[in-house]
Length: 323
Ligand SMILES: Cc1cc2nc3c(=O)[nH]c(=O)nc-3n(C[C@H](O)[C@H](O)[C@H](O)COP(=O)(O)OP(=O)(O)OC[C@H]3O[C@@H](n4cnc5c(N)ncnc54)[C@H](O)[C@@H]3O)c2cc1C
Image (cartoon, rainbow, N blue to C red):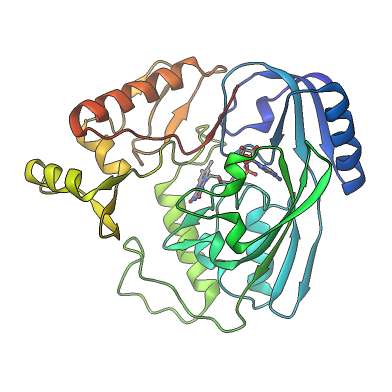
C-alpha cells in the first residue's frame, strides 16, 4: 500500500503518511520482506500499536505493522507472538492462574513493544519475567534469539532500542503459579488487604484510570520523559536548594529523580500551549490536539530547557522519535 495515513496508527494522532505500508501476519512475510529490503535498500520503521512513538513528519519509506498472533501456554511458561495486545495477555495469564504480570495491567501497546523500553509500572518491569526474545534481523534475514542477559535490560532500556533492524517476533515469559503480591510501590494504598491477583489488577487499573489520560480522549504516549538518573554529587547540590526534591536510590552513586516533580517545580503542570499541553492530571504526560508534531516538540523543548536551566538536568525522551 502506498501513501498510507498513519493517523489511526499512533496514539498522538499525528496525521502523517508513509510512502509504503505493509502488515506482517507470518514469518514467511518477514523473510520475504527482509530480502526485498536488502535488495532495494528501503528505509523502514517497525510499528506495534503506536503508543510509544512520536512521528515527526511524513515518512519517506516503509512502515511495517506487526500483526503476528498466537499464544501458547506450557506449565508456567508462556510464549506469545509479538503482535498480541499486552493487556489481553496479562488478562489471559491471570485467568490461567499464572502470576507476576498483575502490576503491569493496563499498559497499552503490543507484546512486541514491551521489551523495547522494558515497560514498567508500580514496582515491576517486564524484564522480571522474560526468558528470551526471538527476532528476525531485517537487515540480514536471520532469526536471532536473545536470552535475558543479551537483552541488556535497564530502566526503560534494552538492546532492542539500539538495533531497530531487529523485528521482535516472539517472547518467552516465565510466570509463577503461586500468587505473591508486590505492593511496595508508594501509589498503592498501604491499608488495603489483598488476597488475589485479580484484586491487584483491579486496584492498578483504578489507579491508572484516575491518574493517566486515555489517548482516545486526549491523544498522548503516556510519560513523555524518562525519570533522569543523576550523580550523588548533583543530588547533594540540589538538596541544599530543594529540600523537597523527590528522588529514589539506584546505587551508591546514582539516584533517580522524579521528572514529574521537576516539571511541577518549573510551574508547567497543566500548562496550555498551542494545540497541546501538559496534562493537569499528570505532569509527565503531554497531550496533543494537533495533526502535526511541531507544537508538542516546541513544548517539550521548552520543558527541557527550563529544567536544564533550573536543575542542571537533561531530560531524555521516553518514546521513540521517528523521522
Ligand atoms: C496512556 C499510556 C500509558 C502508558 N503507560 C506506560 C507505563 O505505565 N509503563 C511503560 O513502560 N510504558 C507505558 N506507556 C508506553 C507504551 O504503552 C509502551 O511503551 C508499549 O510497550 C509500546 O508498545 P507499542 O506496541 O505501542 O509500541 P510502538 O509505539 O508501536 O513502538 C514503540 C517502539 O518499539 C518498536 N517496536 C514495536 N514493536 C516492535 C517489534 N515487534 N519489533 C521491534 N521493534 C518494535 C518501534 O519501532 C518503536 O521504536 C504508556 C503509553 C500510553 C499511551
